[in-house]
Image 1 (spheres, one colour):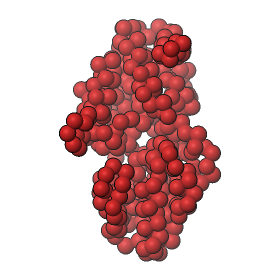
Image 2 (cartoon, one colour):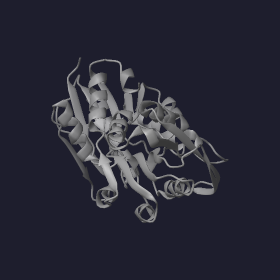
Image 3 (cartoon, rainbow, N blue to C red):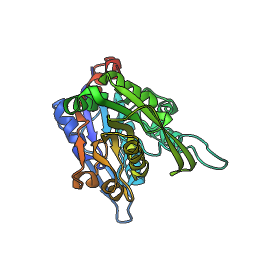
Image 4 (tube, one colour):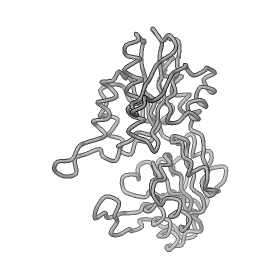
Length: 312
């Protein structure tokens, strides 16, 4: 087992420091600044030779700048004779551009994976990828954590299972919804969506019986929340007693808060994979910390242990 070193990028200092607290170590000192023309400047201020280094960098409103900072950190470490470098990216950006849907468009998720590997990452750790197949885009070991260990105990604490129903907001999330339902020993339902264009839905249909049940929508991210709110309205129409949502990544862009205020969603639970001012300001959103899960994964990787139990 090599000495464990953690470097925290500027995108989510709060989460990075919480992870370090769980690990019982201090973050490695780094200099993260900008030149006068806006170019990022990076310097690792401590010796990392032959160390097992973990770089924590998520994404924020300045996604492209966060990515560039990460790449510069990785390049600096690659030139510093580290034993191994693991990129810890709690929220993986560009994940919705994971395939070629028409002519002359990029596969941005694959491009970013290539950039991270080329810059010097030997391993990749993330959570709730928008499309699980993105894990296969990396030419290095990749772990995609799920929030079962964070969300399930919280749901059990506040909801009796006799009238609970987990709802998948689309066909792509039905497998995850079934996993939650299995852990909670409750029913599962699904919403079928027919999209006419990205972000535009022509129709939504409910599959399953949710009448007189407390519905919980589980999804990987809450962006504009338009679809999430429409799903909640549909559930209420079909007789749901209440609707709550658990979404890992609080992107919360555009009119997200306005949409939530006008919706029937009683509460939205998110994690701190993204440092979101909007999530902190809106009282109907509660932030659950994912730091313990990431700290456990980091410790397991450092000690060369299997992480399979985190996915069971």
